[in-house]
Length: 282
Image 1 (tube, rainbow, N blue to C red):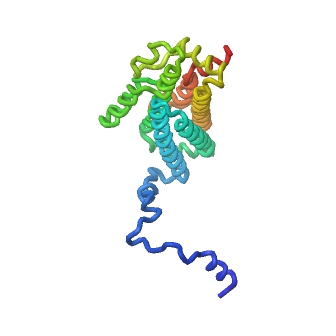
Image 2 (image 1 turned 180 degrees about the horizontal axis):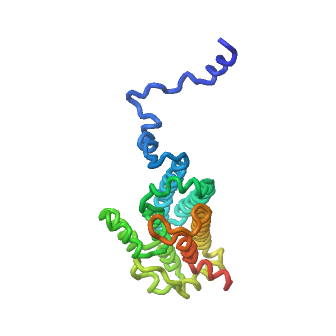
């Protein structure tokens, strides 16, 4: 036996578990067989694999974002801001992963994408219901988007429920009020399915938080966590638009949207508006 083979044997520890006839294995726990069998290429082109995996991984990360946002909303509503901070920080880190994914997809050239684009049919990232749920959770509500999910009654009902729930910002405004800051009742009791409209009382309350950080440290920290997430979401949108323009230019999207034109237009939809406007008035 060579010295190299002896060295390799030394690396293998004698107590490593190798019998999984009855015990749960890594692959079984993660359902890897199901996950890794889910990349079904509809063309014979090499780069379709990248396109599928980028979107599948993004959807997995979005699932985790929704899990964290749901937990954060419950914690804020229960006056447990410290627990919410950990969850919101995690969301920001995940958003960084999602933002970087566009850089990988951008390695796909227009010529390569055209080799399999027609195989997508009418499917499009525009239809990502998890992305819509994230927007709902962050406060951007648009009832018209539910039309895309009419074909699936269960999914449509899920989307409608999310549309009608208070957003992360809504529960944050309730936290402002619970700390004795003046917030108009119209912001605290309203139709949650409608888009949030900026309110002077909310801006004034946040300004008071920023002017008296020692008194309102938790709310100050909450505001900055929210702004981190809002900023990252806008960067994700920008990178999305830039990547799409790099690959297909200004072609109509496969789902029928105006493509890049639509993606650039939504950049004007700002999350947590008073957290931005207060900076000019401080």
